[in-house]
Image (cartoon, rainbow, N blue to C red):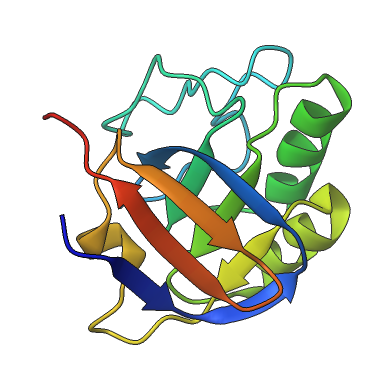
Amino acid sequence: MEKIVLQGRGVIPGIVEGEALVCADSITGWGGIDPETGVIKDYENINKGKSIKDTILIMPGSKGSNGWSCYFGAARAAGSAPRGWAFSKIDSSAGVASAVMQIPTVVDFSKEDDPCVRVKTGDFVRLDGTKGTLEILKASLE
């Protein structure tokens, strides 16, 4: 596999590796996840029933209300948060949630480097919130 590095903008520094969970339609803020387990409850989400815990969560931005940061912050407090996350484009709710979560965060990718398109759920990735990069280390078998 050729080395694939997507360039964005680092928001919260740190380097994490893990399995990508791509939610191309995002996750509803209010009630979209169970903060105790990290399981996605959003009935419209293709990943409903999967957990965000210890993943590298990839989304286009936030979805829904300001409850977004509350639910994701509660998941962090419960130990059910992702290791890091990437947003195609930052928005106010995603920005607040990133500040609350304090996990490595990369945002604002070009259209060509959009992680919601280029990364697949199950890919093993490295997220560098300092350099603003998302590297696909190993493609999923799916």
